[in-house]
Length: 288
Image (cartoon, rainbow, N blue to C red; front, side, top):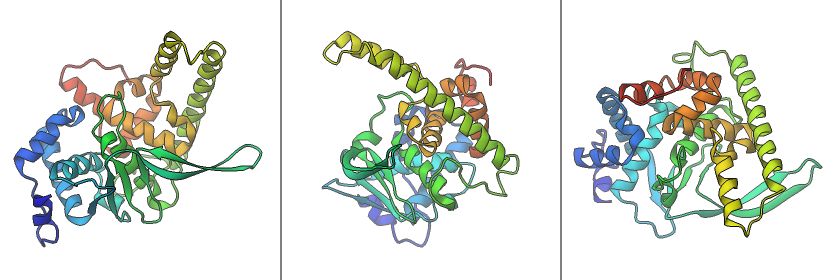
């Protein structure tokens, strides 16, 4: 972490070395699609984030320059055309080597509170708290549409005006075209539809699912892989917003195909259109 030690505490903004930045962009396909002007702005935002927020390794993780830059670049993508002020109440970024254990609480339909501990790949703490990440999961590019950094930092955006609820703050300087009531109505409708799809798949598959049958497991995985979003999006409206944002930046075509109104609202909110980037590179995409 020699480079980070050199830049933290300096009055002037940090400067990410070109070689380190180039390696980061090369590792992340969704960044390689950005125009040069956008990449330059993303680099400046990443430098500002590194300069103003504390990055800490936990559970023995040695926080290297490479780790910090990879996280900063992905964290800054949602605010590329907005402002880092959306992360203003974030205490810092804590990085574990792999999944970490946190307490979980859930109230069932009968009002009974269930508490347990579970391993997670990321967590965004509200009320000015930190973003906590598993580096193993940050570095895992093998799951289509999955991005734990974008997911957790979008939660922080959602928390900017209170608890995460799937309705982020609308800034007068950037979001005049968005009607808050239309946002809430559109996201609520899409969330309900997605939950119905999840329930239908589970009912259809659970009757014939045999956990000891590898063929059945493959069919189960394939059925859920056909969804435009990770099933985790059905857990809560805030998770639907975060998972949809992951897909928007990393794997936008299925989201745009199945939920074009959600894609349109996210384009207005983030002031970006990942499908246009795909189009410029000659990649096919559905009409929106």
